Image 1 (cartoon, rainbow, N blue to C red):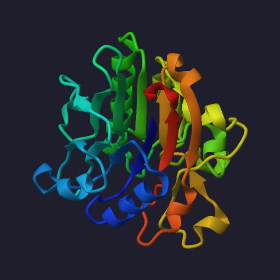
Image 2: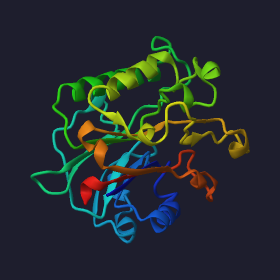
Image 3: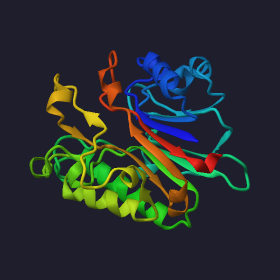
Image 4: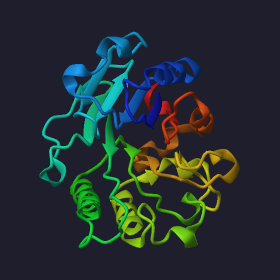
Length: 266
């Protein structure tokens, strides 16, 4: 089972990039974030033409939005939380595989949090912290098995997940208020699948700002996109790749796809 997570930053705008991605690596499941399209305008036929017979999505105009595209049968899980009671289309979850032993897959788009790392001065930052707190508590209250969490979690938790730990400590996405919360969520029952393959001592990024035209040379990146698995799935991890080359595609997203291969779907 090959799973890809990608903040595509507008699905309709970047459909040709999705087609290129699928042609190059042939994923079984693609989890998208920031699709920026209402459900009635979702390009369902175009997505199905790429080989994804099973598609679920939650979207809104111009902002947010998540989608899961699958070549394998999936069913949407009901009764998921409305995080922070916002109804803002930041999460979707499915069961994939047989009903008696499915893989549970969660696709998240965590709020970015604005620019000011102060929950009193900045309501967007307060929302981000509350969202992660709610997610941690929800997962911690469950007996998790065969579960995968992917998405743009908008936090780079480790020192080597950013180009400069010292310079970004007061920058939203790497502040201690965020990193401690994200790690607490992860420790509620998950293993960092990306760091299973790349040691924490090594740099690892998935996002490079549009503001930096020479992004590859300066390499001032952050790891904002994540893949977590429950411990029972760790023996099934086969490969992981950050598709850095996608950052140089025509009209790219500022995030690049992350691919994980699991033997659990075999």
